Length: 187
Image (cartoon, rainbow, N blue to C red):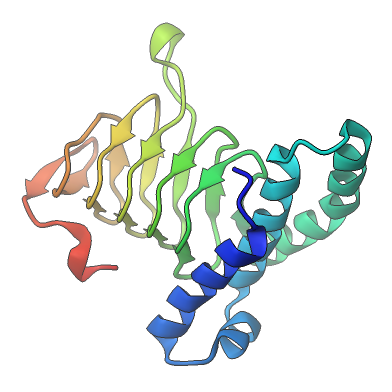
């Protein structure tokens, strides 16, 4: 992903300000998850940009302590190699863990305590790919080499280990389709 990180972050801030009714600047100052997203956008740009190898590595090494301090302070782990689309929103800080190989589409909301990571054995081992317009409720776990299509609601406290089609609400341990309601009312 080599898009301008500040343009992507500007779009993220727009989503925060539209939810809160505050300006982008005030949203940035008030919502700690914005700090994590800004550092993610910059480090992701450096990670995927085709600069000279030395400069890329040097700049990531310089950013590492700052990223770790913000990660410890906010409880949000957004690795530089993860691919996350624009208009990304983390509702509350704390306990958000995303694996470095995860792909998340545009316009997704993630709540507190969410884990999106690696699982499985042999040929089924891997990380999830989330489509666009996904809402993930608090304490949900999405793991394995699976794909969630667009416009899905993942209910709180769900364990998602299977593929799901577009425009559904999923719930349970393991998750199954609860209804045909999509995420439009949640985003």
